[in-house]
Length: 553
Ligand SMILES: Cc1cc2nc3c(=O)[nH]c(=O)nc-3n(C[C@H](O)[C@H](O)[C@H](O)COP(=O)(O)OP(=O)(O)OC[C@H]3O[C@@H](n4cnc5c(N)ncnc54)[C@H](O)[C@@H]3O)c2cc1C
View (cartoon, rainbow, N blue to C red):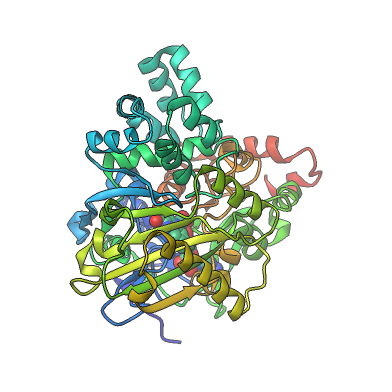
């Protein structure tokens, strides 16, 4: 089979092995590969599909001349994350573009609240719902600016965040720090009520929380709403010029510059383990690739531990915990080619790159309840992207390329007619607050859960975040109770994708953390590091696993 190859043709050492094999060329895999290549490692990335990028790809899906992002479209996390920002991808062709406004929440009655990068404009938008919210928003943003670097470090760097935590205590004092920690547990609705008086700011918070699978009444949803609204205020919701795939292109180019290579159409079928140590992988064609120093897996945890590693190589307790692994909801995504921009009843919404619509906070609660009960929501909450508004290169002048997705329960059988009916509902939600929307449609591409998983096998049954973002599967509980780190119970094997802490989104932190763990294992103090990780794993997995000593030695 002739494979598409990106990069230089020789990422292997003279003995025929790579220093590291990365399974999966999603953003986490590519960031991991770049971090290792920066240290002089020879890195080979094996990608199952025909192109690198995973959830970060762009193609003409609807009508020629209209570019659509296959998954991720807006990238506040990428620009704020040290893991991606530190790579200097602008030197490899990446250019960020911004819509005139960041985010609008359009209520079913046509009112809207919006975030702009100018804090005074945001303040006046939320003040239209409650005058006191102008100052409340400014105060919240001022607090964010005080803690932002340490909060991002605490969230995105390897667990446990000792340095960032200590820095936050120094900056805030113990009393304030305690209250910041409480914020991390709050449901988005409670946070909204504690901080704001009006429906506008509250809906912006709860809508941003729903970028995860967490409704407004779920513990821990508030912090996601807070992070995304504050990042929106701070860095906007930028998009790569030309499409999200331009971010992938820059990552691949940078890797190639350092001697790394991505082989596409080369799915990995097995991680090779000898004496409790990962020593390479075998691809679907049966070819083995030796990894002298590390194997990094940018795939969901259940895929790694159930499909790629032999059960005998893993602690029984980890496998039992995987039975309780909780996926996030499934997804239906629609892309449209429009003959002109969407004509919103609230014209200001036309300025925003991202638009939330369909429901208010109570409606989001109903939406989340439907999903929890396995019902397809009759009134979907939509995340919609006006892509040409954000980046004029996405479609011909005067037209609009539009991207949207909504969540649906897992396990539903989506016949073409059932999918079509749901897309009708989605289009009606837009039509209700933007009359004439349907008349502007000149092309449409629909992806249900099965189609999403077809183009990216990591989107298992349409789950977009490689596991729920709920508090019971965060930090030391992600992906299963353990250390919250990339290290796995198999020496030199690292979990590098969104199933690992800190979870979904295009921030590259999972990949960077895995690369750092691999570097630590191979560094001057590597033997000690490996020994420490082994004994910690023994502690967290041993009690229900009498034969664990056979696995971790
Ligand atoms: C519809 C949708 C919209 C989204 N919108 C946003 C957004 O606007 N902003 C944002 O920040 N995030 C967004 N996300 C989430 C984001 O795309 C993911 O969190 C991110 O891509 C995860 O990166 P990853 O590298 O962990 O995994 P992925 O991007 O999923 O990459 C994993 C890669 O591994 C490959 N693979 C799987 N199995 C194998 C195997 N056995 N062998 C070899 N290769 C394999 C896959 O083909 C894939 O290329 C969205 C996701 C979806 C689906």
